[in-house]
Length: 361
Image (cartoon, rainbow, N blue to C red; front, side, top):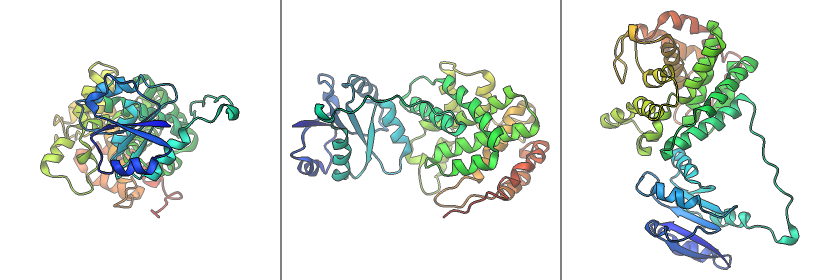
């Protein structure tokens, strides 16, 4: 009989899991502190606190020793994309939400059981990397957010390649098609980063900026919120308004992003400027450094306008997205906080949804 190793604190429904998969799997429970001397097996279920970094480094090294083709299923909190990213970064091959549905777990495990030699499947053909701008952007974001969540080094080259693909995609299909595609994506963090990226590239096209500057803005759009990988999930995904203390922590994300990309330095100083200062306003009321107009570069001004507009047109579960015209009015109403000469040039974006706007269903 195949063995399923369960790692972590004993779940409340452990007996139910054992009962429901009896006859297919034998269960063996191990505490997270007892894995060092044990070799990973073919099937593992991990039920730990993914927000507690005390054992994550040790666990990642342990999972790296798993046999080829082995399955590692993480238990994650419902609707927590951040925990899923951390699970993937640690080496997880699949995940299941709390409370554990043993029928769903068994279905995942059974599918992974290799076929008998007589029914040997043909060799797998490696999947080619996605070449379209949206696919490249998703792949790049998943990769760097996984790296950021696990505390590993950020691979800026992956984002640079994706940034170039996004520039090509926006030029080919336009902003409205990009927004429609992004709004269908399930991850709120990725949705926002992708919207800001597309808006910034379209804005750069409108301004007639060079290819190099368009790629810089595309790169910054994808990385501008990377610091949110260090914000506690209970704050990042809180369904109700944040407390004053939680808002202060949320406002740390530009500095967290700067630290991730600067220690060690993996991007240019110009890129760090856009990441750490995308919430700065010309009148000095922004954060984290309270910069004023002379201290804020042109590219930062563009990414700030794109960030605000992208947030307003996002589709969220608790509110419909703003139309382009309504979002543009907010930018105009912000007056001296934003570069109004740039905001006037941004008026093109207010019309992106004239023929494409799709109300929430």
